[in-house]
Length: 218
Image (cartoon, rainbow, N blue to C red; front, side, top):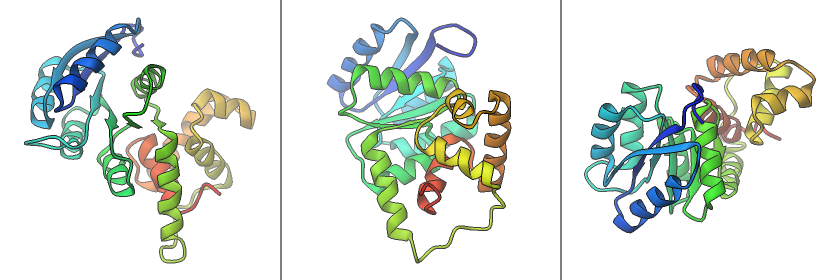
């Protein structure tokens, strides 16, 4: 469901016709989702997104003409109100970090089930992020690989902001973070916005990637 209370408008982008049509069929069974179109590559996804103004694009990564990372970068620059959830076969650190760096709000592998996809779309539509468990492991491993060689930048994050960032990295929503820290949701949102500013992140997914990259989740 979108913030307006209407069904979340979703555009599907995948170069494999069977996968694309299968996703459209699955999403069409969700009461809170309205599939507005489908694209066979990143270039077509951009064209349709400009025309259809979806809330969320469910984006594959490896596609002809324009891949998912390039399409996500262009889409987030031209239509920041449209969120991107990556759904791909690949979960290597290069693919994950590239997608999150491009501005994807969520990252799932194609092992994800119907409910996982629905949850990721709902989270993205509300400005939050969902990362596949295997993707979280990749980010942790990437952070460990960088440990000792790359010191975290001096962001000026307070102890409370670090607590909020760690809970974000664990996949908690603003409401859940508020309950865990005994603070109001509005206060959590203030902390989240400050985290974005201090880490140079555009959204939750980038902030979570930053936290894992510099070992701030331990």
